Each structure stands twice: as C-alpha cells, then as structure tokens.
Amino acid sequence: MSIRHVVAVAAIAALLGPAGLAQAQSDNEREEMLRGGATKKGVYNIFGFDGTGLGRTVVQYQSKHKPGTIVVDTAKRQLFLIQDGSSALRYGIGVGRAGFQWKGTHKITAKKENPDWTAPPEMIARQKDVPRRMKGGDPANPLGTHAMYLGSTLYRIHGSPDAESVGEAESSGCFRMRNTDVADLYKRVSVGTTVVVK
Image 1 (cartoon, rainbow, N blue to C red):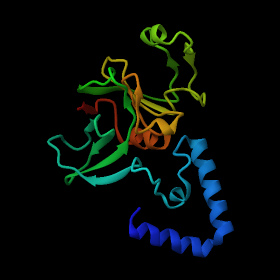
Image 2: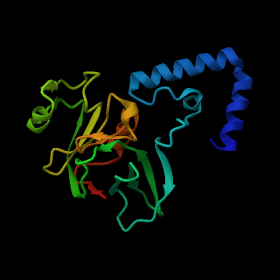
Image 3: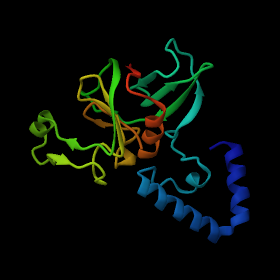
Image 4: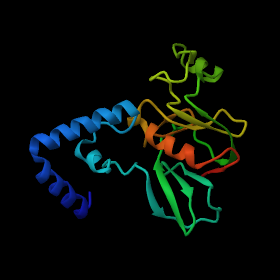
C-alpha cells in the first residue's frame, strides 16, 4: 500500500470513526462476496484497493499487438487488454496447474453470460465425483458469471465462484478471473478478439 493510500485510509477513518469504518468494511466485504469479488481483504476494498495486486488497473505496456488484443502472461498470472498509447488494462488471473498450462494464439469465438458448465470427459476420468453439469446462475458454477470461449478449444477466460483461486495455478487450462473483473473485460471485448497466451 502506497503512502497516498495510507493517507487516504487514515483520512476517511477519521471521518467515519471506528464504528463507521468497521460497518463500511463489513458492508463492503458482504457486497464483494455476493458479487464473487475479493474476500478477506479488509479495509482496502472500501477505497477500491483490494490489497492483492490482482485488481484491474491501467499500466504502461509496450506491445507489438494492436489495441483490443488480449495478452495472457501465464508466468505472471496476469491478463492484459492492450489500449492505445502504450498502455493496457491489467487483470489478475488464475492459470492452469502444472501439466495444464499452454501457449498459443486464438480468437474469442463465443461469449456467454451465466454460462452452463458441463464437465469434460477428461475431467470426469480424473475426478470421478465431479458434478456432470451445472446451470448458469448457480453460485457454485465453475465458470462464474461470464465466459469467453477460445477458438475451438475447451479453454475459456471465465469468472469463478472462488475469488481466492485468482492468482493461483489450479485450473485445467482455463483462465479464471474474479466475477467483477470478468464482467468488466466481457463488456470491453467482442467475438473475434485475438487472445495471445504466452
């Protein structure tokens, strides 16, 4: 947390008082959990700072790719939406666990809000007790609130009911985002967007 953020927190804490700050923090965490956002981050969320370094932010980013391209940096567990002027919107992501990471270039071939989820045969073979199907809108649906499908693969950029898994390497090759972030990305990109995974 920067000095500027500490000063902002201290100033607002002084205005709200301890009880008001605690209530605001509690209300904010409850709201974040219901939206599938970060949990257990405390006072940071009141001011829009989640304290994880995984939240959406604008960063300087030199790229040979044209604006509107998505670049996924698997090693850094970050997704960049290239903007004009040598900048990008950066989002924290969860990536594939060891043996499930991949590289390549695809297009977004479909976008779905509240997507249904069906366990692929490969996953069923590995995990016999995995649910076979979940309807869109189910709070436990592994795809969260939004999904963007990559090429003709089984891979997606999608939300997650487990916000704490963002920043980890736990998936079967998909890129997980917090539901708040995937909803933001979803509205910024269209079918046909290029996705470069490195």
